[in-house]
Image (spheres, rainbow, N blue to C red):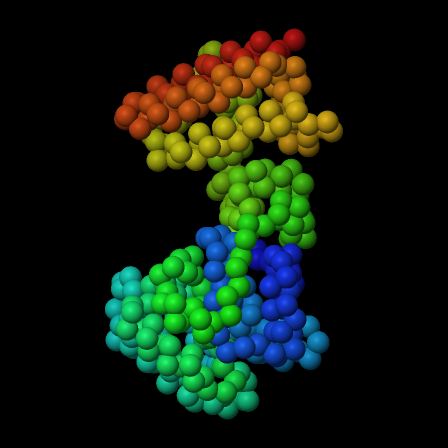
Length: 341
Ligand SMILES: [Zn+2]
């Protein structure tokens, strides 16, 4: 999967800009808490932060290719410890535990007490920090109150409220927010994603850089998306519908994704109607639907959206998937045909 660079995070606001500067100058404090919703890039940032603090490059950290960067990004650097729910640090803790037990934090304290043989900082990343038991948090608190030299502990959580106020008060809290569309778009382009795909990703990402990058490189997603577009917007003959709906009949598991994609397509058509400039997403549709997008009354867009919402409801009450899909196919074909010349 493609990932953003450390510097990309400067777009997240003043706190992150300052932190990136501190990382570059090795002027970090001993504990940070990265908070914010899922998909905003907190874990990736924590990983990059660990890598940058260990990187041997004198100018641009993390360089991504020195020995320390390579080991750190593979999770094998001896001076970097990662603790997460289901990925315990201490030996003997079962992997299926949903909490981070005190034993893990004790092991972390042992790790922090040994000085690095290479003179590196010692870095601890605690993902799912809210999963620490109260006992684990209290144990961590002792280290936070009297930290050894040259350590940096980075807690990552979506649920700050699950952490003890005493723990929070000992960490510098960095809040991540949803990313601006323009920034996501730029990062996607820098990662080599084409304009059309990038814009479609944007519509589905809701400000989540994680979701955007994941979708952009998820080939199965793009294959399904193309299939949905081909089936619903490029079908103009009744005789094709049974064949197409037959192809869907055993794919109820993908129903939600298919319906969301269909909705997203209708939204693209609607956005184009309201936009002043030509929407590049529109080129993915055949001429009748391009005409629809430019000329149809708003009620027609609503009618399509409604039909998709109805389909979702029917599936909830376990209607037959093929029947539901077939109805939608007929509806879209009928509308498309009205705009054919
Ligand atoms: Zn490096």
